[in-house]
Length: 287
Figure 1 (tube, rainbow, N blue to C red):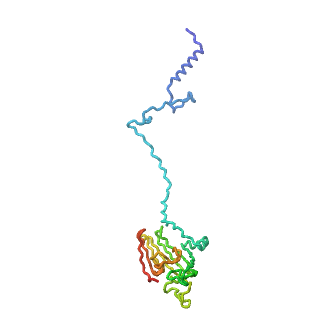
Figure 2: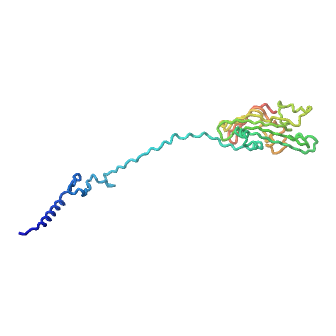
Figure 3: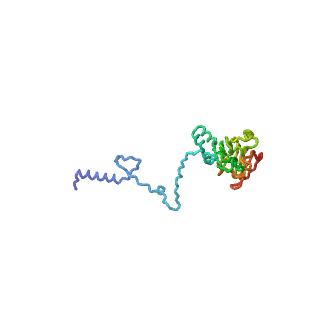
């Protein structure tokens, strides 16, 4: 009988014990490993059909796409109120020397705020003639070989706004000859007529005439524009006017001299189109 060494028996027993441990089934993860408390037990992956993601494009499979998260936007509030119709800017009127001198002063600012102007002009003439005293029937430079101060004109004006607005507009005009020799031709009956006999039964060389004074209103919504004047105003016909700045020459034509220069009453102008306007009025007659 072979003799067995004591050490070989212990070695054989150790190997057998290790083999038993290595061949033992894996413990459940919920059961602590009391033999090797610090060993790591690997878990096998779940290969069941339920745990696998569906393949893209496979018939019978659907993918649920999460709905987008809608973030409420801050309210913008009510829409802004529409601005009121703004009138087109009216081109500034020509500034005469007095208005330029008043520009920037409290009086000039007040006049501009009210759409008013104060201005005027002076006209003088000397007409050489073969006659000794008079050039009649030529007018208004009727004195021969004599200097005449024909007009010292003063105008206070608030014109109506006739474009770029839908609102009615109101204004006025006051024109004065202060003084001048032209008053002899322009003075109407019943106004300052004493000047015509004040010089020993003869007219004064220079006199005063309120040659225009009227109120005016403009209504842009009637037809294409409706204007009405009430007072004393220049006659409607002819191409010449009393105001010297509106005429190319100092002297006037015969047809102008024997027509009424001004009329007193009411006159309306209705604009039917850009080419057609209709005027109607009621006046006292030629004066």
